Image (cartoon, rainbow, N blue to C red; front, side, top):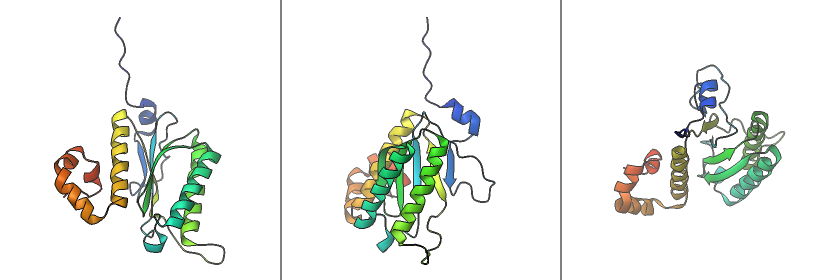
Length: 192
């Protein structure tokens, strides 16, 4: 008797949505479509704001602490499991697993609103304006290989956020061939 090979791809997500990514700049100028989500697979979530620089940076100590607190509280409230996180200053990467579409939508709405208000100091009578670049970007991870790639991508983002330009250049000289071969750093513009 032959054993059946386990598929690394979530066929249900692909059949239902015919795509695995949503948000960011992908949907500009196109009609709104339902965000592809899966309760069984991990999801890569990116929240990005070009206005988060200087005093508004997500890496500023008071902002970093507040953002971590918001993410933990809302994840607990809306049943979202956060496995990994990378705060890069002007964007945040999260690896999440969800229990339901409705709860994830509530999580996104509350987290984006609270982070924007906390960072900008906006309140009733003192508006700030548009803070986030686009819709939150999500991608359903289709295989274990994509999960491994995402782990490397998070490491690269953490390195970029915490390592000086000189140290980065030294690492590129020392390990440049390896970094170019394995890709995550290449996508962040770290490799020449």
